[in-house]
Amino acid sequence: MSAAEALRAPGASETFDCRIAFADELIKLARADKRIVAVCNDSIGSSNLGAFQKEFPDRLVNVGIAEQNMVGVGAGLANAGMVPFVCAAGPFLTGRATEQIKADCAYSQYPVVLCGMSPGMAYGELGPTHHSVEDFAWMRAIAELTVMAPADPAETRQAVQWAAGAGKPVYMRVARFKIPAVTGAGHRFEPGKISTLREGGDVCIAAVGTMVSRALEAADLLAQEGIAARVLNVSTLKPLDEDTILKAARETGRIVTAEEAVCSGGLGGAVAELVAQRHPVPMRILGVSGFAPTGDTQFLLDHFGLNAAGLVQAARDLLGTGAR
Amino acid sequence: MAIAQRTAMPLEEKGPAPLVLGAVKPSFEKTEDAEALRRIAAAVRLKVVKTIALAKLGHVGGDLSVTDILTTLFFSVLDVDPGNPAKPDRDRFILSKGHCAAALYSVLSLRGFFDPEAVDAFMKPLSPLNGHPNRRKIPGVEANTGPLGHGLPIGLGAAIGAKLAGQSWRTFVVLGDGELQEGSNWEAAMAAGHRGLGNLVAIIDRNRFQQGAGTEATNRLEPLADKFRAFGWDAIDVDGHDVGALHAVLGAPGADKPRAVIARTFKGRGVSFMEDLVDWHHKVPSAEQLEIALKELAL
Image (cartoon, rainbow over all chains, first blue to last red):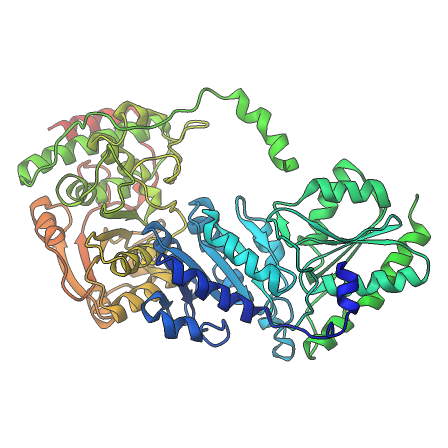
């Protein structure tokens, strides 16, 4: 069954909070490996670490509301031979502790797994202070830091497994806003590889995280207009799977990117940097274009055109104006 | 391969063969004898001043204030093995005031972590000996410090890790006094006190100056020992140039509290025209000044 078919299958309306899969997988790993520790900033509830704490009270290091210290502690735990998963709401982890992520984790190459919980606009009405929409740009700018955003619970589990053994620093979004499963049963998440969820030769939609299911919906709508859209799930932003992007550029001639993040420096930026230098094609970059107004997550995604209708419109724009 | 990497590669290829640092016979053996430690510290000071004069860059004032602390740690306290710098149960040492890299490199090299002559490459193009230490290039370095306020949180994590692993090695962090103005230190101090980590020692190089002026004129630190005590630490005041006193304080194992050692020091210690002057934070001696400094340090 293809991913698009899976989305249309009975029960496909079911959506998931990826923090559940995240915590479940982390506990499984921790049972098998004593080096696994969780570090958090008074975020046991919001990072869904309650069950972890119950089973491994000593290995849940809650440093209190102190993100700079939290990330430094993660690096120190890695220095001591531990495998730390540092968990905090995305905005505070990546914003407050950027320099610690850069110097203590990336430049020092300590294998700290930085888990940006409830990323994007998951905290809807709490407003831009609590939205983690700059994280892709900030984290992608740091050398030797892997940046990923699993697209559903299955990918989240596989990303956690991989990160625990990666031996290098990783930033990972862990989605809270409920999203459907987009990967089929046989899907194997490969870090650094883009998976092509739907083939198509007229336009390519490269999406990440929350936006992947919306990209599949858009492809369905475009198909009704006779437009074959290729859908890419870019679950690793860095290092970028350049071959798959360039192949899409060559074969479709136009690329729409979609991310629950600011329009600069994230997925759209990464794709643009690549194709502009290697195979220029017309692009549309969909993302969060400014500080969000008040509203819940669904409202805000619609507000910024981060939905199937917005993607369809962007694809139509490219097909009307793109040179092919 | 990323485009940025590809464009950068030819530049790297133009450079000399990379200098790889590895263990050598130590210039001095470990000792608990204060007189011997003083002789080693004098050799470190000579090396620091020569290194900075050669590079025409560096932070000589702080290097000379921290010299006796680093000498005491590496030659009489730390359980480290230059032949096996990554041995899992080594004591951890983190130089939070990473800008005093020349002092650290001098001490590490004399301790046998790498050839003392390699320190001449300090800050040269493509040298592993950057202006701030890089653990991936320099054996004996635990963390890539430089931005201030990073060492204590990392040391705290290492100390927590040792406890979790049931291991008895200790973690020592050397901080500048000025850098205590960074809030991250107090986040770590609060958590270390809360956890009662007796395996963590912070040594403050209390030379009373930061880059531009005195600490007390800039953003007052005193009463510093009381601040640490209020955060649940033992705080000990010591003459930071008395290697015997430093050895006594640093060598004793901790109990159920982290320990802050406030080491009273002088910037530029050992060179008359540098001593206790803020101007020498990162000034480089002229040829004439170098000659005078080397004469004074050789005495």
